[in-house]
Each structure stands twice: as C-alpha cells, then as structure tokens.
Length: 78
Image 1 (spheres, rainbow, N blue to C red):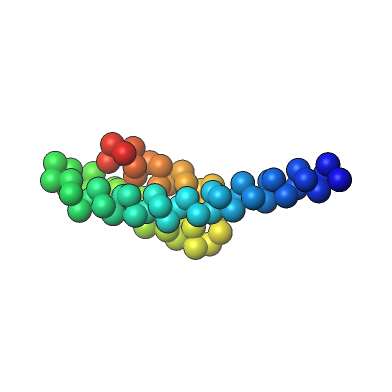
Image 2: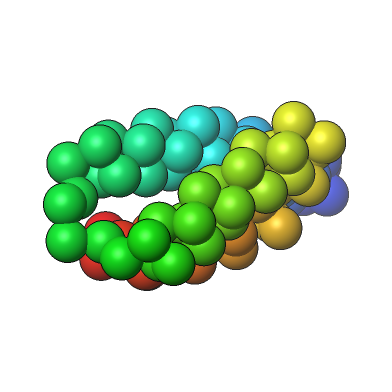
C-alpha cells in the first residue's frame, strides 16, 4: 500500500513539472516583448533557449526543458 501511495505521489509531482514549462515559456515571451534594454546577443540567446525549452517540452524531456527555460529566465532577470 505504501509503495502505491509513493508511486502516485511521484507521478503527480512529475505531472506538475510537465505543466510548468508552458508557464515559463509564457513568462519569457512576455518579458521579451517588454524588455527594451536587452542586447541583440542576449536576445538571440534567450530566444534560442526558449525554442530549445519548447522543443524539449514537446519531446517529453521536462527536466531538460526546465533547465533551458530557467537559463532564459535568468538572462531576462525573471
């Protein structure tokens, strides 16, 4: 019984992370649209990280997606 409960908790937490990626992408898109001080080089890097994060999310690689999107968020200061 305990194993079943623990397994259910792990699956529930994995699902929560899977839904975190779209929220990160939305926050990045909003910040890009309103961030006039971003250099061209940083903008290019943020856009590449955001695209990579979306690709990884769609491929089901949520941990990698969260890392890429986290780097983009860090560059944007969010």
